[in-house]
Image (tube, rainbow, N blue to C red; front, top):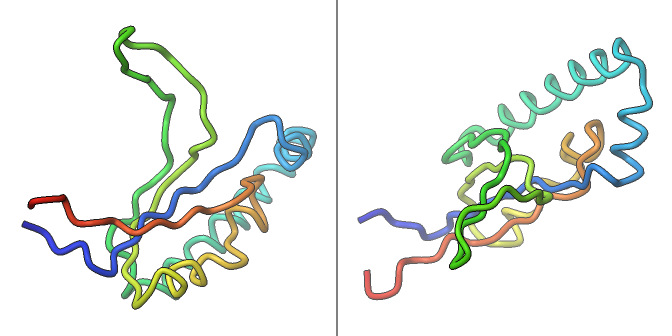
Length: 122
C-alpha cells in the first residue's frame, strides 16, 4: 500500500476558447514555435527547481472519453496535463505553481492542486 500523505495532484487547465488561446493561435507558426521553446525551457527550469518534490512528472493529456451508464462518448474538457508533487502542506504545494509557465508563457489558464487522499478502509 502506498503512502499518499503530503502528495498533491496538480491539474493544468485551460480552454481553447479563452482569449489567451486565441492569441496563441493568432501567432505565426514561427512565433508559436519560438514561444513554445521558451515555454519548455521555463517548464524544465521549474522541474529542476522542484525536482525533489516531483513524484511523477505526469505529462500532457490527450482526447477524453467519458464512460457512464449511457456508454462511451468523446467529450472535451479543460484538462491539459498533470503532475504529482509532495509538499509539507496544501498551501506549500500550491505555492510551487505560482507564475508557472503553463499560464505565464503558454495559453493555459490555471493549475488546480488537490491532495491525494488515502483510500477509505485501505
